Picture 1: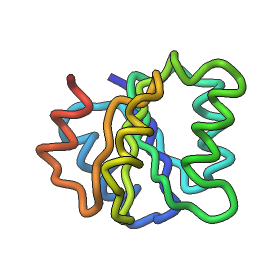
Picture 2: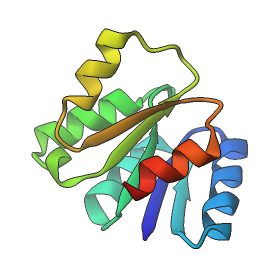
Picture 3: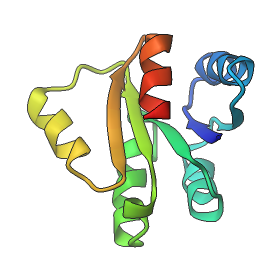
Length: 118
């Protein structure tokens, strides 16, 4: 399984990359959201772990661009963020075809594994 991790925090991406590798997942990491968007468009990832709260080009921006390009539905995106989500916001995000889950930081690693593998 190939996982793309898009988060502007290098500490988080480093930790997630090490964890995923230890669990046998191939993974690619980027700390640049625009690069992450391009990697989603160009790559073939089984799952994309996408931080919502990034400066200049947020995870929401990435999802909107993928919708505009009509390729969101072809993705398996798991959103994560330290920001508190309202139930309404979560419902709106997971209703989008291509968004498969929402995790809150700090991420429980067993929950992350369950979300990726389902």
